[in-house]
Image (cartoon, rainbow, N blue to C red; front, side, top):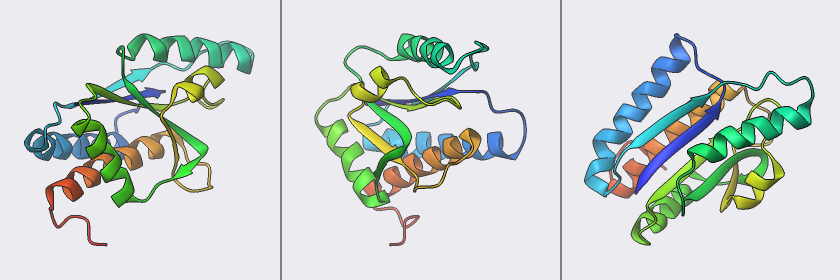
Length: 160
């Protein structure tokens, strides 16, 4: 299974970008041994439209263009389900074992994801009730993906 993270907004050079890249590289190292074929990150520029409805629609079109056919979609949504790390790892493992070719994680823009993308999602996931900056959500998601791989591998990184 190949994983992808599609994000509205770009990470500038700095500590968030370095940390995100570190977790992506760590995942690649351990993920190959577990049957994961890689982790791609796609940045999409924020829409410059004047109204939120148009911004959401433009961003949704750009996101949808990057989602491969027959992908499992996970939407990061502050109103989504809070999933603990072990359950998240088990879910990724199930999708991998079911032969899902692509799992795509989507982080929307400041106005959120389109209702259509939210409906398409097999899982709407939150990192608690707080609202987080998109840069932090990306880092936290990549850390959780890496942590899930370590859980599946029986690696001691996750100490629960």
